[in-house]
Image 1 (tube, one colour):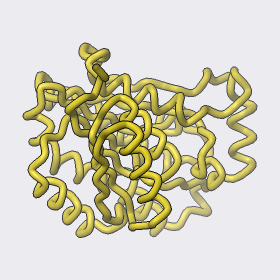
Image 2 (cartoon, helix red, strand yellow):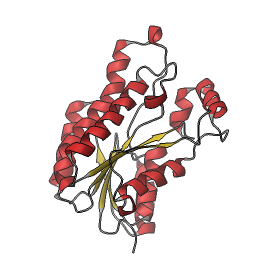
Image 3 (cartoon, helix red, strand yellow):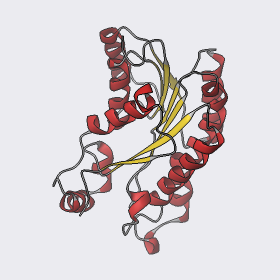
Image 4 (cartoon, helix red, strand yellow):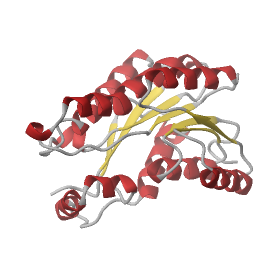
Length: 247
């Protein structure tokens, strides 16, 4: 028997990068998945169909833009209308931002917080009632070491992840006994996200790593799956760094 047989997992930003790897890991463990993504594309639908067929599970795509609050509300309403039990929520979706404060536009601040924090907050608020009904309810938030270490250029992105860290700690208390809430704080990982951060940031992260490399998406995804599983049944309110060690 697999760890997530007959359980349903909601994953935001599930169409590529780390989100897709998290989806694959949950699928391999028997989970049925509600895959939240911004838009419908034939290529990703074919990929999801192949993953579902390979693992004998169901994957249901839900489309909404995390940058649009009304769309997020509509997406949550669609999920709840499915009348499916929900056991796990993975708040993974996010957008990068790297700039020192004098060169940061306030509109960018609003836009990044909308995707990386406000929308995650709204989704969690909307679905925590369903999660509370599960005997295995768990939320795993995607944080970042950027929200802990406070490196230059991270006053916006890092602040959104620091907000997710605090949300994790607060919700672990508010939902205690019903839903476990933890977060994963990766270092820079080999995804399109890393490429968007720029070559300089990527090189800096490699140099600062004790292992002299970036993380592999599967290394992060396996940690997410572990925290959501019954193997982590006494882990709650924790922020797990997965960064290879930092100098």
